[in-house]
Amino acid sequence: MSLLEISNLTKSFGGILAVNEVSFSVNNGEIIAVIGPNGAGKTTLFNLMTGIYQPTGGQVLFNGNNIIGMSAHRIAGLGIARTFQNLQIFNNMTVLENVMVGRHTKSKTGLLGAIFPISRVQREEREIVEKAMKKLTLVGLANKAMVGADNLPYGRQKMLEISRAIALEPELLLLDEPAAGLNSTETRKLVKIIYKLRDQGVTIILVEHDMETVMEIADRLVVLNFGNKLAEGTPVEIQNNQEVIAAYLGEEDLVC
Image 1 (tube, rainbow, N blue to C red):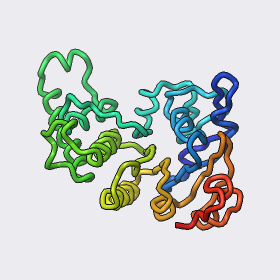
Image 2: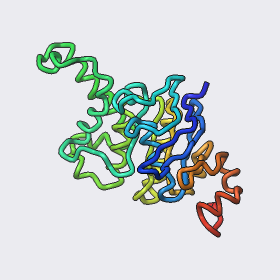
Image 3: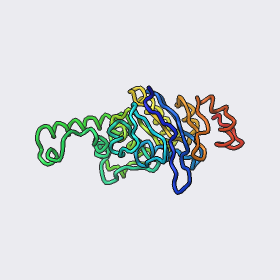
Image 4: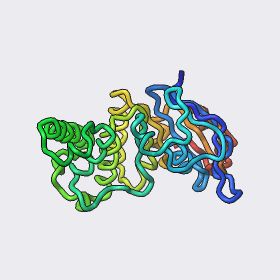
């Protein structure tokens, strides 16, 4: 059984089909890239998979369970985490506090536990800090833990958002344009982080326009165009797909 199965997923906005009967599956341990021109429906697809939008039709199965109709919070609790195309960090918090927020679905203490500083609450708080620091170490931000998030340069803020997402300890991580705005050095660090996460058992789907990065790290690619799935295959297959070349790059070659 696949970790994720998307079947005929459809979303329309006022009669405009943003995603039109898209189907594909994702196996455990895979790195899947979703590519396509601007407006192809890539971020809408992510929003449907994470409960931000509800589809017009189709289904999304995660570990065999249909997650359509579930809230974003519940889907996150099942093991799906994501980053956003536009940074979603808490600028008024420290780097460490941002990642601690990412542990919210793992917290076992309720309202009374938050009010009364009993030993169990204190122990859980220490565990949250410890786990958050491990995630910061993975992305190279451990030495910035007590720095205000708004004081980080853009590239490190992107790493912070990834760190907060993986604080959920997800089975499936969705990365929406993680390399956007990064320089070549930062992009190389990102690639290493993605490989580390895969080695730790995290399955990854990324939306990305950096074709060099995509072709290097993706096991398979799903190509969208005007909300439709145009093609699916390995990097080599997609590089040689004439429909993809025409739709995505016009007269240019897809090979990087």
